[in-house]
Length: 361
Image (cartoon, rainbow, N blue to C red; front, side, top):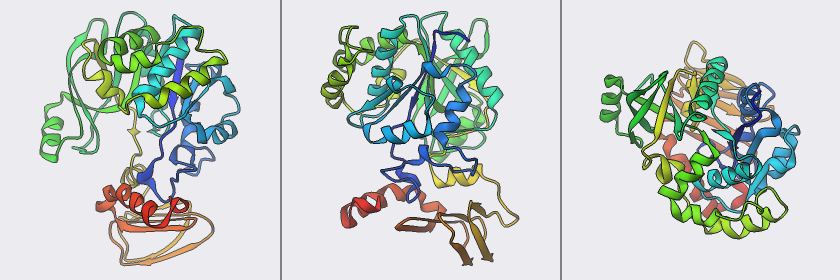
């Protein structure tokens, strides 16, 4: 195993589109959605361990989730858990993690992963990551994974591939990025064969991504540009507590990837889903003859079709006449809504917080 290879796992999101299962105190990355006995975060760590040793796995999360992470991942040493004092999207956390790793190992290469995605083809995943790390270790390159699209999904960003990289059959220069197109455009993308879903999985060396921050996002770069003696020492926490909240809230895509001229895409088929919504979980789950999905619960239905049932505890659900609905019951909250309206869940959670208080979100 290459000791210069590291993995950064981003696990600080709140997952509000999975309410009421995903809550502020325990978001979806810490939940066992598939009855495997492991959370999505634990499955993510298991997936990367054959490539990156536990000592080289860095977790970046919000401070309030420190206890959950230590409980779920005792094999990851405490100094590898970076605790954000505020939520600022992906660019600041990636910049911090890159500085932290570079101080430990200036020759480091890094794969950056979300903590809450589904990957069914794990061998294909490991092959893609290994080849991708080899690619970025041999040049000043930023690499992202592009997923072979199976439908004109309007909830994903798209990457347009360009000219092939010499010596790598599955890696091409990125021609363009498009954020969540409308349906007509998504169909055009699918028909063209040039566009791939943006998985939010990135590979680079610590040096190349820090150079990219300096060139394309100097505001963030300057905030985190501390002496190397700060990172990896007891002084790091105090520095981050002061600096991190000052950063703009911006994604790595907007901060760097859509601006840089050394960005490549590795096109892959991983059996992937970002599990960003109830519909995404529905599509990734086994269904019965009526197209219904039951997530670890007992259900008795009559004339129900295409409906997702997810209920915590030992309740029995009896339902009749539901077509294409979400029924999710957890703790002090029950959600019943058409699957077609799931994009409104985030807005509803905000309204619940305003009207009824934090205890319900």
